[in-house]
Amino acid sequence: MKENNCIFCKIANGEIPSATVYEDEDFRVILDLSPASKGHALILPKEHYANLFELDDELAAKVLPVAKEVVSKMKEILHCDGYNLVQNNGEVAGQTVHHFHLHLIPRYEGDDVGIQWKPGTLSEEVKEEILSKLR
Ligand code: 5GP
Ligand code: ZN
Image (cartoon, rainbow, N blue to C red; front, side, top):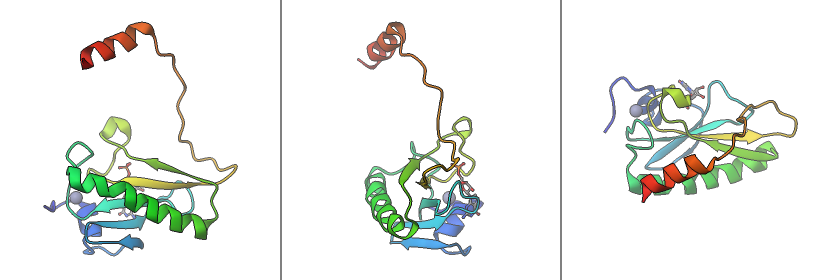
């Protein structure tokens, strides 16, 4: 399924041109228009899924192999020192385009890409609360 007003549906299916670094029958991988670092790319499924929770399981299983292939190739040409894979779900988590996508963000020694958080402390109470609710 495609969604009419979804920019990533249009890009993934070639209706809007994009800087495509990889394509197969299920995915298009494009360079991000506002990159966090040189080579920042996005894996887009050609079908519309708003987020991870909607993503089809069979397709989900194909995402990491595509990431691995693209990242391996990009590492060779970019000579980066590392990679972050980031995937936002929901506005509070920073999702701005509601069509599932996985960010592939090359990292370079000394860059100022700010993917970090302030480490907290896992209390016994919270740990027990979560584990007991999962049982
Ligand atoms: P999100 O914040 O939803 O996880 O990430 C959306 C990403 O899509 C952002 O990094 C943003 O720069 C990128 N983006 C938004 N619109 C376009 C577009 O039209 N073309 C490309 N190539 N990237 C886009
Ligand atoms: Zn879409």
